[in-house]
Amino acid sequence: MEEKKRETWGSKLAFILAAIGSAVGLGNIWRFPVMTGNNGGAVFVFLYLITVAFIGIPLMLAEFIMGRYSRKSVVGAFSIYNPKSPWRLAGYLGVITGFGILSYYSVVAGWTIGYLYKTAIGEFSKGVNPEYTKLIFQSFVSSPFASILCDGIMIFLTIVVVIGGIKEGIERWCKILMPLLYLLLIVIDIRALTLPGASEGVKFFLYPDLSKLTLTSVIAALGQAFFSLSLGMGVMVTYGSYLSKKEDLLNSSIWISGATALVAILAGLGIFPALFSLEGVTPEEGAGLIFKVLPNIFDKIPLGRLFGVTFFLLLIIAALTSTVSLLEVISAYFIDEKGWSRFKATLFTGAITFILSIPSALSFGGAKIFTHLYKGEGVLVILDLIFGNFTLIIGGLLISLFVTLNLKQEIAKKELNLPEKLFKIWYLLISLVVPLGIFLILVFKIYQLISS
Ligand code: PHE
Image 1 (cartoon, rainbow, N blue to C red):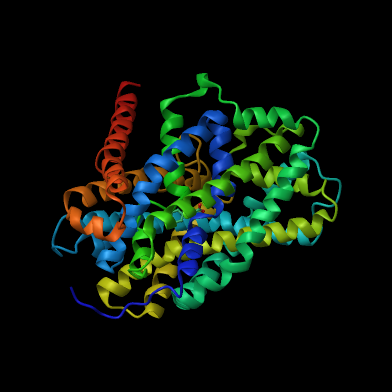
Image 2 (cartoon, rainbow, N blue to C red; image 1 turned 30 degrees about the horizontal axis):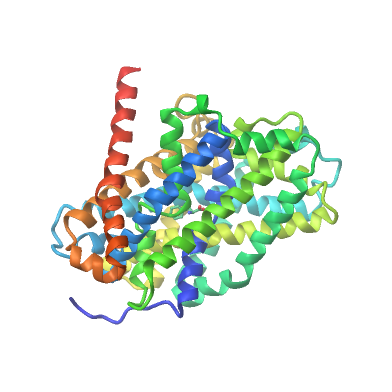
């Protein structure tokens, strides 16, 4: 294999932080509560945690193996043995999914920029209540100018970081700010849990009601596990390709997954108790859930405005470390496979993403056709269903098949460097449990669609 010099992470910590940075973001703080609310609460939470452990971690290892062994981004990693192999298509699916997710993720990230501004100028200090926060949300997201502007700012920031290269770009942000995010979430939880009526929310979030267990919630949990861990489209393949041979992959994967799931749980433990203590918001609020709930909690915390500003700032940074990883996958394809410079590749993919993101930015009232595209849902929600759920799951299936059918077991063994027993468990999970699980779920879903 050609040994071109490839950038590598500055240290083990830098790599773990960047991977956590990619994983932790709006997926855990915005999307997880929305999905939990829509899918019956605690049942969904447990399905999510089970999937993270038994499908997420083995798959993350598979992505790291593919990346570190091939030293290539996702398309190259799928075609290391034969550049013409049809597996390449699986790599393209990753790149397309990256465009798809980034095009709406940047819009929601833009909302957090808007909320930072609104909180800072004191828009939520004038006697907040759910009715008011709902109104503010609606008027903000339906303004074409504000949505596109904030979306554009987010994509611009992402381009700047990705052009800076992996080391300077990502490492710097994560070191101090990530721990601070956990701390703020804990403060939010403490406040939310001590509000009157909070126990109903705890019950909703932690005590499973098995009657809520449906195929839809299983699929949603599977998709959420992939989305939240940035799996199924090659982020971890690409990040793994910058990884030195020394690092312990299993240990890293457990840390990354644990830290990510923890953020989701902390977010849920803040949102739902607060939600049940408020009148006029329901768990099925949809994409605006956290934006409608959070300002009400900040209002009940001493120095709430300062607190809210800090929180939204951290959320923007958490989102940025995720958008950076999405754009990195796409640009790395043009850099590795097309030989473009990092500057050109990033500017080009960033500009395309911005154009693609405009329909999503207009899908909450900004433009009628994007707001009600299909069955009353707007572009953003539909793109999230397709790219945030479906193609990630398919990508995960393909990765597990590639690693079992194509990559020699010896290679995986060497990369993982695990005791025999652990290796066997991983192999059983990745070669059987992951593909079969995903396959069965998809078959049931298709059957359900056909028979309905
Ligand atoms: N994991 C990120 C988040 O939770 C989103 C993401 C998905 C990033 C897929 C990259 C790839 O916010």
